[in-house]
Figure (tube, rainbow, N blue to C red):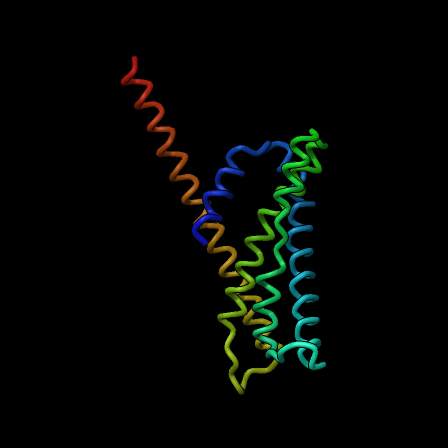
Length: 169
């Protein structure tokens, strides 16, 4: 939680923005859909293995919390090899963007699962709607906080560089 924001900031600061935004649709589809598929498939398999006495038995909530934790892939080595080989910049942007967003999706999904309560009078659909609302609120709130902080840092850095320039002259 402490190291991820500076790493993402540095990566975003040094990325080729034109190529990234040209491929943002593919990035979002891969990161959201791919991460959700990984979360659901690993969580369901984890739960099934527990029910079949092939591992410890866990509840649905525990299974989804674990699935959320392990679902985000981290292609650091792939990106390093792509950079070394001068791979296609579109492919690099898609893989890079997907790796950044899937971390965020997995963190938000984990928080959503941990916030989900088990009320006896709530139906399955009410729980699903509440989970989707919690996910959306946490994701959008985090996005807004990140954007505000990025704009604040950009403003401060721009003012600092103009102040240093003025004092040097």
